[in-house]
Structures are given as structure tokens and as C-alpha cells.
Amino acid sequence: MFEGTYSNIHLKPKTRRSLLSERKGIESLLVKEELPEESEILLRYIEDLRGLLSFNSGVEVIQGIHALEANLNKLHDRYPGLELPNLNDFYQELASLLLQKYWEQRTNPLSEESTDHLFLESLFIAIEEEIYIWQEKIN
Image 1 (cartoon, rainbow, N blue to C red):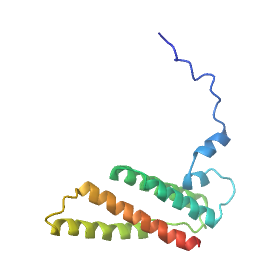
Image 2 (cartoon, rainbow, N blue to C red):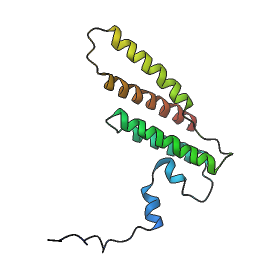
Image 3 (cartoon, helix red, strand yellow):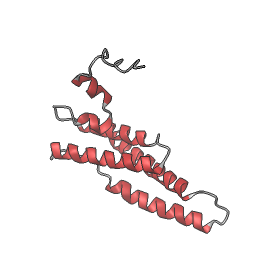
Image 4 (cartoon, rainbow, N blue to C red):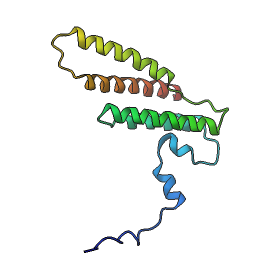
């Protein structure tokens, strides 16, 4: 009747080290004690952006963008003098993409693309542009 109720008692407890290994991207830098290098920050930022491309809905992508922005803000609060990426250029690029895609959809009477698909596609294009820009800065 109660089989498996206490089956997790024998599991190894999570240590600080195992918790650190589960964190990815910018979030993993928040638990480090030493000041991260600029190249490491950019690589983690790009990693987070690439992760957003795996989502299937606009809502998930937006939640991911907000989480990324929150982590960047936390990192900035922890290291105020550190030069960090911000999402202002991303939002500006996204706005123009959304306007362009919406205009294309409304002026083409044969377009069967849904507004949700249009929005998700615009998000992905803006994210890919952001990845490209930051990869160029690393190289």
C-alpha cells in the first residue's frame, strides 16, 4: 500500500558542489566566490541565449528572457564595476522584427502564419542575432 513512500531516503543528499553543477549559464556565476572573467560571463550569456532557442512557446521564451535579465541584474549588483551584457539592444531588435513580421503577415492575404508563430519566430531571430553579436565580441 505504501510502497515507495520512503524510497528516496537512501538517496545521497545534495551537496553544495552538486548544486553548483546543476546551475547553468549566468546563474552558475552567482554562486562563485571569485570575480568572473569577462570571457566567462559572455560564454555563459551565450549559453543561456542558446537555451532559449529550445523552447516551444513564446511564453516559455519570455519567462526565460526575464530569468536571464534577473540573473544579469543580480550579477551586476554583486559586482557593480563589472561590464555586463544588457538586453536593451535585444529589445530594440525584437521590436523592429515584430513590427516587420506583423506588417508582412497583414499585407500578405495568403499568409496562414498564426500570430503566436510569428511572435515565436521573431523572438528566435532576435535571440540568434544577439548570440551572433556576442560571439563576434568574444572573437
